[in-house]
Image (cartoon, rainbow, N blue to C red; front, side, top):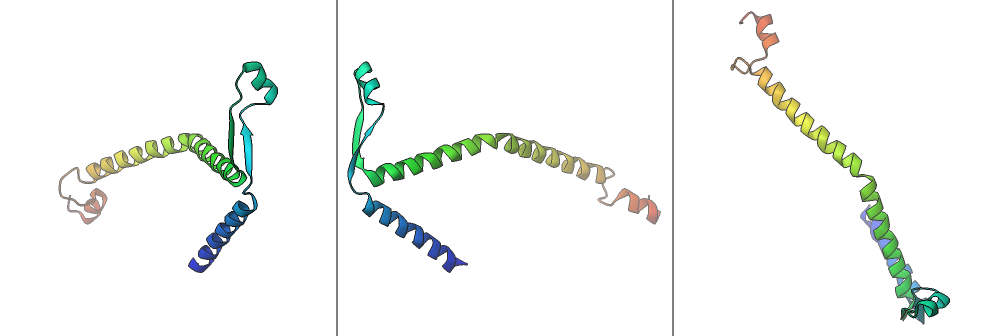
Amino acid sequence: MKPIRYTFWASVALVLVVVGLANRDVVQLHAMPPSLGRLLGVSPTVEMPLYVAIFLGVAAGLLIGFLWEWLREHKFRAEARRTGREVSQLRRELDRLRDSDGDGKDDVLQILDGTR
């Protein structure tokens, strides 16, 4: 299984290098349309290689997706915590009830054996 994983990641790395080499030209990224920039008097512009802009866009999309999914699953994590606390409480109660007479034996088995 490891050779398949290494082959996959080597292929991903190769594709990223090829995309980076193919998109080395410097581009201007504008934060707002030129007409709105002229109206407001500001027009933030950044110059960077195109592959950096592409990779930053992909990274931002992944980050937003992970955050969205983490927030969406909050109710499931809360329910799991609540269920875990309930299971722990029920186990403690069961242990307490099993050993209510202090001898560590099951009450039903004691009745069947006639030792009670």
